[in-house]
Image 1: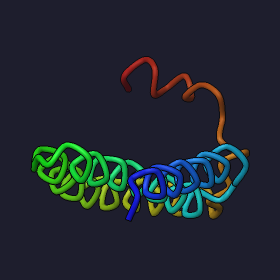
Image 2: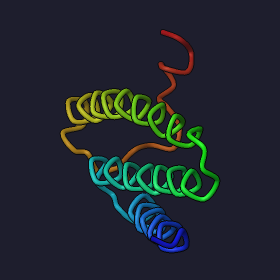
Image 3: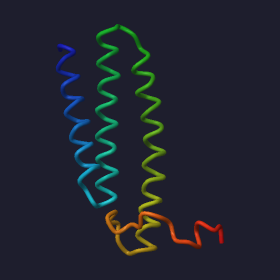
Image 4: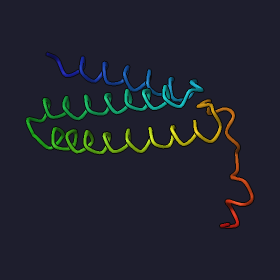
Length: 106
């Protein structure tokens, strides 16, 4: 396989994920789009290993998988709290600033 194919697929995955993060209003779909972006980054790291005959990119990709698992757990917990507080996971309805009682530390 030519390395250019891997890089082009990675750019496509990242672009689709970026489009999803920027256009979706649903928090779960935004989280899934962010995972697509991470998949593109994984593919770049592994393809770069193919070009340079090294294993550092694969090691970084494995590290990113572990971080992504923690990210999904935290993200889903935040989405659940958003659902409980507002009965919606639409991110357009979120306020720009926290309420005044949260800012004052009460």
